[in-house]
Image 1 (cartoon, rainbow, N blue to C red):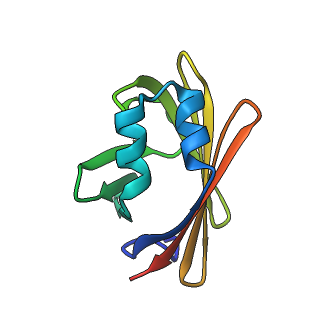
Image 2: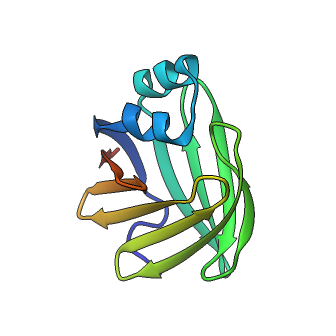
Length: 131
């Protein structure tokens, strides 16, 4: 089992997230909200099904998936996408397919989670600390 399963990580630092959301077409109000919250992320696993839960004062969302299998996802900003998540060592790599395809790489290190979000030429890095 991956070492990050069952641990919680809280957002500590965010770079270029507003530009990333802008590129996705997220409106001003949701962007302001997205930039003002510090969500907590937790990954759990039951059998071969992973669940990624993001909790904030604004909203809680969960996605459940099996590695390497495509699934339907409603993103936090309300977009409908098809996603596939794979595990490469300590990285969960998510490919979102939809009107605006994007990639989310969640890299777990000792006590940290670094999330790199990419859409086109725009990249955002968000750093979470274990809580």
